[in-house]
Length: 618
Image 1 (spheres, rainbow, N blue to C red):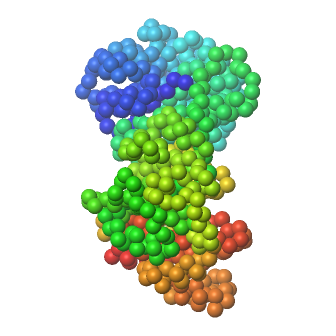
Image 2 (image 1 turned 90 degrees about the horizontal axis):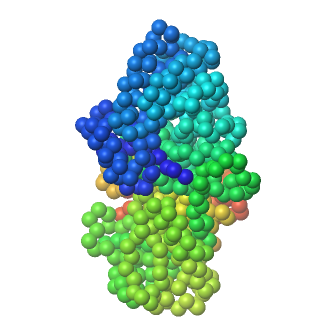
């Protein structure tokens, strides 16, 4: 599948955008007219740069208010068209995007519009240019793709075809049924954009909230599958208007964009294979990715710190035992309790935060295949030093900088790398109060949240749930849980409020946490308190409110309060949990799920946020 990206998707100058697109691995670009107008480079120089970078210039856009106009103003449209065609000849691109009219459109007659398109096609033919007619969702008279396609058929000109844009289709609540029956010779270009489903005017939605495929709610697999069926074989391009993208690092955004297309291509290839049948014409070539290696379980969590004593004391207070020091890495320890393994690496040179969540390890069926899929999806590999006789752990960097590792299964669930710490792998820890990693909560900068969702979806086959918003002292916190099949791995993503990034936590990044599952949270809390654990304080008002909310036994509530426990309940079961004080950027939560409770104690999050705000001197 030929991949392209509109320069409007990216930040920076046109030259920077071109280099970023080429560096990421795109085949071509759409040149957005405002980018060229402000460039100091001539069209000829840009053409040479594209050739040097190995980029095709797939389309020039947009040409607005060119058709559907009053007959007396149409000659001026043709004058402007000639100027654009001359420029495109200098630039070296042969497809011009012609938008349906939104401002000056007065023609509401398909035959008359088709005649204007046919005349425009004659002009374009003089320059070897194709016109791709696109129905804008807010077009005055032509605003759906079927209508635009009918007009193109009426024009019946070899230089006039359709541009299909997923945003303009799905934002109207339309479907793509019928695309598979279109003549592929009349589909000149395809633009893709995803978007969250929002209740607002379509123009504002389009200009500010488009995202890359896989980061929104549109069924782009259905569209691409139907294009494959009809025999379309041209470029598939991204056209994303997004305020965040225009401020983000241009190279990072380009990589995220190509990753989204590779993931979409893989999803479509699977869907086409499942549907069976072959198109009559040579279709899009859809390339499969290696099969996703969904995590079967957590392998380890790594904390990196310059305050080793404080971190190991916390682990001891929670009931962990030192499994040993790594035989070739003096500054690395492993702490275990039951099936949970926490690696602690000392980082005395840390200058930002004394303690942070550095890495997550997952057990997968085929670590090599997981690493190869990650490579195909443009994930950056972690440079990890290891001795020849040590376990190979493939690692990649998540968008927020967290290291993700793919490890093999071990005997009785104990990974082979643990032997490098001198731990007895046959020593099954029975009767441990901590029974697993319930979830790991990662904080995301607002501008990279969608990227993180796509990253975890495409690499680990995790699925996003509906997002929630929780009010805290420094602003609203948006949270969305990424889950594996069977809920063996759960990663809530929290979007840190802007105030948190601007110092509401006295310069600290928004804190992340590891939630440990247990069989008896009261027993864990009692043991931790005996060992001197600093619990996150819970106000008396919270417990008084519990009685009112749930009509709980006062003695039960008193027990909760005495241990600093929080409580939630739904129709399936109960949830008891507590939080530790925060070390640097990290704190620990211990949870006990009773019955079929599936949530994460969201009603208690404001209590935690307020307490942490006070803890950090807010």
